[in-house]
Amino acid sequence: MVNITLKDIELGENSKVIEIDGEEYNVSVALYPSSNKGLHREEAWLRTEYVDKGKTMAEIGAMCGVTAMAVNAWLNKHNIETRARGQRKSL
Image 1 (cartoon, one colour):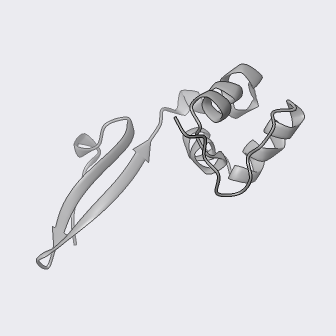
Image 2: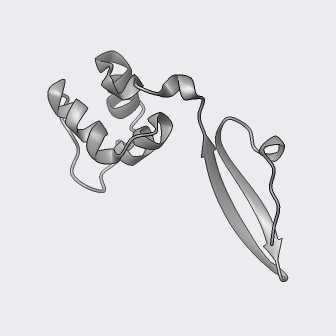
């Protein structure tokens, strides 16, 4: 068993390489402050993350503690055009 503490992880997106039984694994962890809760409902913030930064609905959902379907619903409510599944804006 590998122990990773919260002290080992910073806020935001992190990637660590851990070794288990001589094999290396890349582990990605994302932690976001609880202040992100509800941000997916705000049109300007949602437009910035989805349209300008090219984040996926799943990424935005993880940031806000909701599902990608919840993000999709708010994109539709704000008439923000969604990308085809699997499409990401090239930055």
